[in-house]
Length: 410
Image (cartoon, rainbow, N blue to C red; front, side):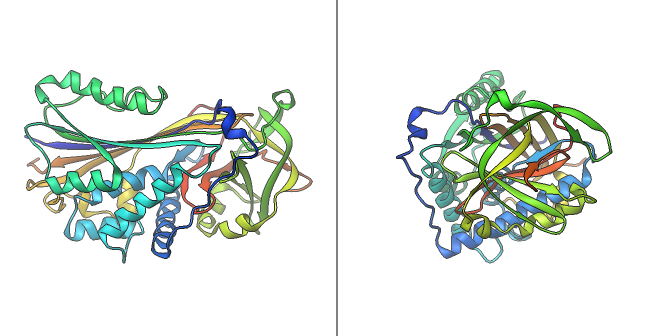
């Protein structure tokens, strides 16, 4: 018999129809002032995010739109980390950028960051919710439940394995409610050997700080990295933005809401591709962008919408998480006294960007099973590019992606 623990993380970004209060010019965001330890942890964890994206992008088809959520994957693995021990813990801790941090410091920093983010920008609606669903005849250790309640505010629910359909519907309804209908199903069934589901849902809604006029959107030529040219609906307008140039690429920062959340666009210079500039993302000068005075700049930005999914076991192993995926070696003794290991990590994302703003979603599912036998005057974004959605004060990277072809949906 095989016992499986599912851990699912779901992140949703919606930047549509904000309330009038958000766009009251008299309302200002509160700054996030992390303590030195927390700031170091966020910085280290961001390096995990950039390295994770680099591994994914390198392994994928180069002619594919891709987006991942480092925040989603990090939060999922951070919760799983509370159940790990020994070398399994050490490898996960190191890969996530948490080396030299005590477990309580990791959890406290995650809690502090989430608390700060959700109360940060009054022009941005952001909610983060967690829940734990375990079968009532195989409860996890109390300490594992308590740490996720204390630091991740997880709702705890027991389900009857004899009523699998009801359990599935309850979990999916919770996700549907927390994401306001944007993701109506995160699991397709509850199997007899499933023992737990850990779910995280994040909802974010905002508009561009300076919206694009729909009447200015026109078909423009967009050049794919394979040399193909396509006519793509392109937004055009004058936007107050920050940008700087490197030898191989330019970084353009487009603000949302009150300016505390931004989309960064990494546009390769002529003669370079997204693959060439990919290793440079981890050197992004967030502080320089933060200290710049925005300038009004004409920009052309293609509209795009696509979905992406990937099973991440290979990528996470490449980052050094080995034991956790190895039967008879993985140590999750802080969850259960049974021999368990991570059998798969699934990740799904969605993004839509138009004149009003952006809408994005990400889901990460970690399955743990019981071991058994067996720029210029006009900034033209007119070719394949990379992008990230980042919070300004902490530099937390929520999403990173690549737009190869704005006209394709996956």
